[in-house]
Image (cartoon, rainbow, N blue to C red; front, side, top):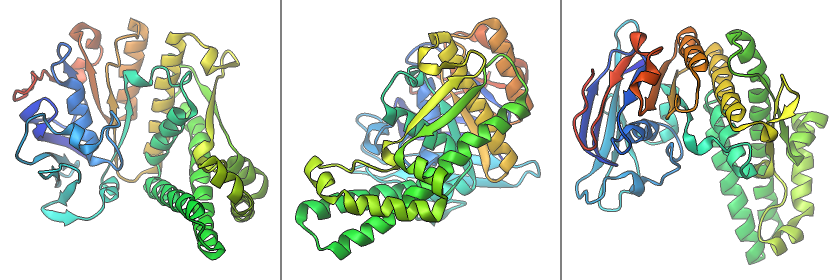
Length: 371
């Protein structure tokens, strides 16, 4: 399915916004401050968890708005069947999402992933290979969720049990309470590690499907205690080993005031295959190309798995690409056959894309129109 309409009310810079789309990919251009990234962020309201900017819901609502905020999209498939998805953020606290699909209320945001999934790349991610492990874990989990609708739920269950266990340790809860929470952490944690591992393995299939040379291939290794347990022992034995490790670490974790073992401490290790060089040692341009290559490979692999529609959100994507790579990106997106939304300030940089894409020029806070 493809996005064929987008409407916003009181989202970021937009008091109101409406655009009808053809269902093709979309190039969004305009000066800084025009609201280009705000449109991409609005789309990510239709996914689980935080938005593209990692914002909390009150931060997404337009400053000074007193009425409710929200976004709506229309999805259409080749057979012209339509689905209408609406997310509302009600006042006065603006701290929760109310979701409707075809007018019917939906209780969980995760339900939206049955229809729609997003992969995105933003300038804030350009230093991913240099930043803290937590940033790389979030990136890995996001690309994992593009192929597994259960991954976000597994992660939420794990993190909830981990918080409850830490509170129980601090309160001196009885062993049976701790054991139940540790069993939940072990079950969810091994599932998380398994999905991450499957995601890393899928990248090789994605690179093979794309067969492009402009964006270098990378090898991906997930480094962590639970990942090692899973690789050496298999799921059942890894689950028991992780549970036993948590039980043995109760005093250590209580004193440290944090859980010292688990998939929440794993790291993503990426290597430039062509140079046999760690990504963190590559040049800035090579790191950007590696990131784009990873996103494209994951998109190719996820598309091969079928399921809900996958949409790529590529913010300021052409800014640091030479002409050869811009043309290669346009060709690869066409080959993938997925809908993508691309933003940038320089219209000329999108010359390779525009013949086959819609072109949207929004103004901050104004009604958008198709060029």
